[in-house]
Image 1 (cartoon, rainbow, N blue to C red):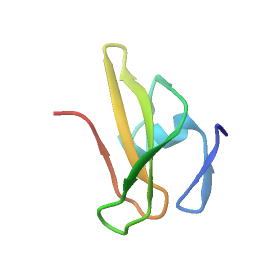
Image 2: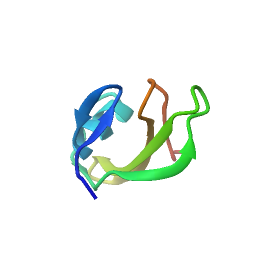
Image 3: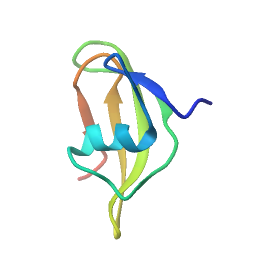
Image 4: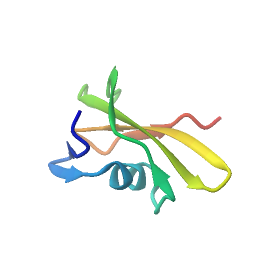
Length: 75
């Protein structure tokens, strides 16, 4: 599976995708995967990436490939 994916018309790495979701830089990110769900805003394909925004936190983030919608699995 390719590491870089197109999101909102730009090629992004896992780290960059995590930063788009989080809104700031992250410590580490795993590989990008297809989330197997549709964006609730535009119906586009959603990607998922696991990342660590801090040393003690691991988050699964979700980002639409077509629009600005994003969310995490935080409570």
